[in-house]
Image (cartoon, rainbow, N blue to C red):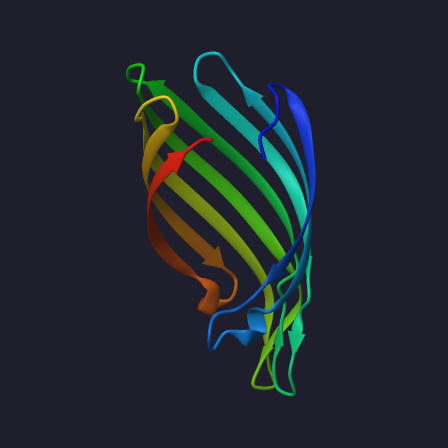
Length: 166
């Protein structure tokens, strides 16, 4: 979601989620409402903050309860360097806190309530390849600190994209 400089953006999204093989418990519908305040300066800085509510079909079996509904607070900043007319380099960082509804239960044992802090740092390079083509490469490092051990992890995400605008 992109907002005009200094403007508030609001969005509602309804999604059908399908889990991969062995992850059927991730299937369901998600209602997501988001409010964001975005400020993009002429210097290349982009600052944003927002809140979101995600209401998703939680899954209960005879022994387990999985909560996928959460409230989220977030703050982010990025800076874009214009290297030349065709190349842009972006550095970014963000923080999110997700507070999940309900008590997580596995094998009839209460595991506690779940709250995740997500911290991310990224670098991306964009290059125009003509009037309607562009290429994008990015590296993102993410740390998830969760109150429940099985949701606590780090990951690296590499993305390569070739894009044509019609």
